[in-house]
Each structure stands twice: as structure tokens, then as C-alpha cells.
Length: 141
Image (cartoon, rainbow, N blue to C red; front, top):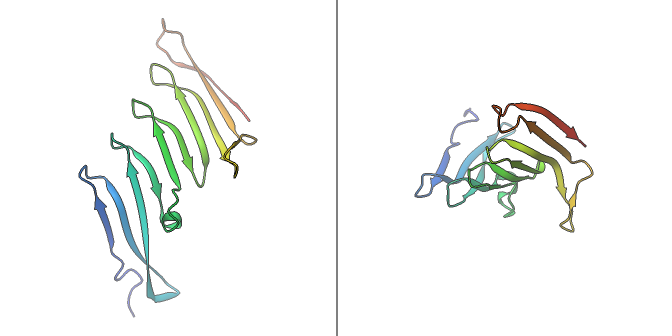
């Protein structure tokens, strides 16, 4: 009997910046050891090398992304859209500290945002004459 992990290689394709743009993994299920399934993952990066879109094996065949992210000039995530976690937004102040965040946003079929289950997080920091320590975090549903 062959082990479940035999003949199950993984192949990664890299772009000229050495960022993985495709990953192919072969999977063998214990119930059907003679059948091997290919599981592709697609990744796209922006000009700075940050991951902008990704599709795991669940959605790769459909051409849809299950993760997308937009970044600010400093490289921090501004907006992330996930097939599993919905959409999240995060805004920072000039010092790069998180100030306002929203999570649990869901895009409806019409393209509008359903905010009925959204959680808003606000952070307050000390003034500019002080070290800038975090004073409070407030969350609102």
C-alpha cells in the first residue's frame, strides 16, 4: 500500500521579484488513494510587491478572488476583502497608528455595503506634546 502523501508534490512559480504567483499542490484523499487532485493557488502583487489578490483552491477554478487588499503609501492595509471574513477598513493617523477601523462589512448582490453587522473601532491617543500612548479603544456594533 502506498502512503497517502506519495506522489503529492508542490510546485511554486515565481515572478522576477521572487514572489509566488502560482502554487500547485497535489492532494490525495485517504478514501480515494488512487486519485490525485491538483489544488492551484493564484496570487497577484502590486508594483511595490504587496499581495493585492489571491485565490485559493476553492475559488481558483472560477476565476474569482477570495482575498483582495489595498495598501496606503506606507504599506499598511487600508481595505481587505475576504470571502470568509467580509470587508475590513483601517485608517491610520500621520504617525501610522490605527485610528478608525471597520470590520464585518458585507457586499450585497447589488454592490452596496451591508453594515448591519459591522463593528467600528475607534482608538484615541495622547496629544502631540506627550509620547502618544494609547488612551482608549471604543467598539460599536
